[in-house]
Every structure is written in C-alpha cells, then in structure tokens.
Length: 269
Image (tube, one colour):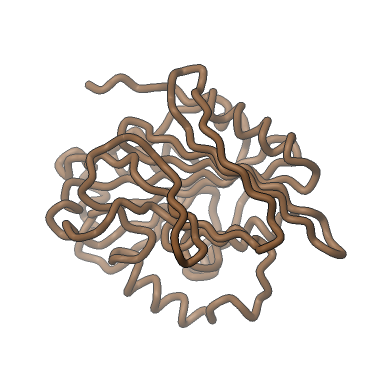
C-alpha cells in the first residue's frame, strides 16, 4: 500500500465517523474540503457511527449491519471528567478542536489519562503526516469534542513495510448525560465487493481479548491491499490497530499480532 493511501485516512471523514476500508477510493468520492470541515464541526460530537453511548462493558464485538457496513461496538467504560488534565479542560468551551503532538506520551500528558502502553509501538517510529482539514502536520493527532464527552487520538507507525494506524477512543462520564439515547457503536467498516473478508478472535499473551477482521482486496493494475484490524479494550478505552501491507496478509497479520501481544495490561487502581 502506498504511503499516500494511508495518509488519506487522515484527510477524509474521521475514522470515528466512518472507517472506509477501501483505501484507494477515487478522489471524486471524497467530500470537498469545506464540506468535510462543516460535517466534522456538526457531526464529530453527535450521533453518527463514531459515537459510543451508555454501555459499560469491556467486550468489543463486530456486528453486520443492513447497509453493508460492519460496525465495531462495545469496550467502553466512562472515564471521570475530573480525572482529565486542566489543559484539556480549558478547551471545552471551544468548538471541535485538533491538537498535534510529537509523541504518544505527549498526547497522554495533555489529556491526563494513560491511554495505552506498548513497547512494540514505542520502537516503531511514526512518520509525519498532514491533516488537510486543519492544515497541520504532526505524528499524533487528538480530536477533542467541545463538551469533552469524548476524545479520539490517532498515531501513525511503521513495522518494516507495514503501515499502522492506531486509534484510541476515550469517553468520559459526560457522555452518559449528554447522549444517553445512543448505541455503543465506535466506528463502521465497509469493504469493496471483491474483498475477501474474515473474522477471528485472538487472546493476547497478556490475556486481552481482541476482535480481528482481515480483508484482501485484489486491484487491477496496482498493488493488492492486505488489511488486518485488531480491536481491544484497554481498561475501558477501545483501541483499534490497523495494519496495512502491499505484500501479503501474513505480513500484515504478523505485525498485528506483534502489536496486540505488546500491550501492557494496566491493573485498575
């Protein structure tokens, strides 16, 4: 998979609204810049596919929907608003907001919550990427809802020839008050009709249960696409690991398992 195809994931609809698994979607299918900005401002913090609701369960699951999407659901616990840092609390009066960081630790320090620990990713340096919604360049992006009901953090990593995007979905206890009518959907996936898709469950070496979905998409005249997704709940913070390879499913799958086994399980305090 070309690097620019991976970067497109950061330039179209936010993955926590709709995960478009056809990474080489034609440009004409993408929203214009102004339309994207308006949709983000209106919908990122509302009731589309990217919002979880009051379901305090740590189990993540895939659900096939009637519209051809597969939704990723569950795994959410609600972090106390009071546990967030003063820095991020100062942003709650602003509209939809984007912060850019140079390290995952820097992002965690900003939100005031330990999102994940993974030595494998610590040793898989991220590339810079460009988010044309806001014209910012960085390694890690954090999308912040103005009412601080949820915060989504994205990071780009590489293991050999495998491109990796990690999404971390943090929901606060404000979600249960503001959006009690919503379901527990995190995001949705839709693959091309010619994709060969499989699902599995994997138990990591640290005892985490991961839902895995993999898709092979042959492409005439260009490199085939091999996509391996794993979703876990890290103490109630759903985390999606997306591994993409031009070479083989084995390469993408091996990288995914290496990352899943690398998560350090934090004991609740």
